Length: 82
Image (cartoon, rainbow, N blue to C red; front, side):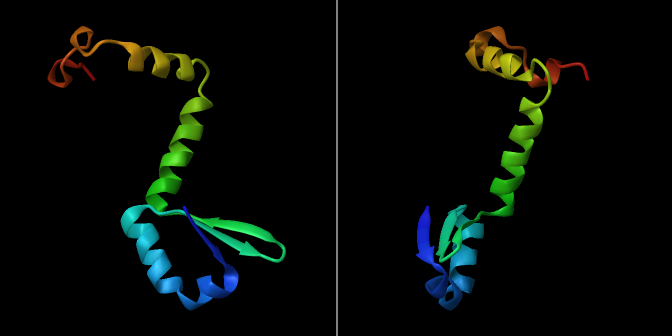
């Protein structure tokens, strides 16, 4: 995470935003009134998807169970019936 004050953020906004987009580098901008966070759209979408999944009842437990399942116990992607 890059920490920067608002004055320096204004001076380098283009480069900082390009770095955020290209490398998913989060920026913490400090001001007199508090801080603000800038993150890439990709990171934002990932966070929102996580929030949505964790709001589905029982999904957290299913995700944990799936993560703990050995790969050899899983079926191949081409065998999944949608």
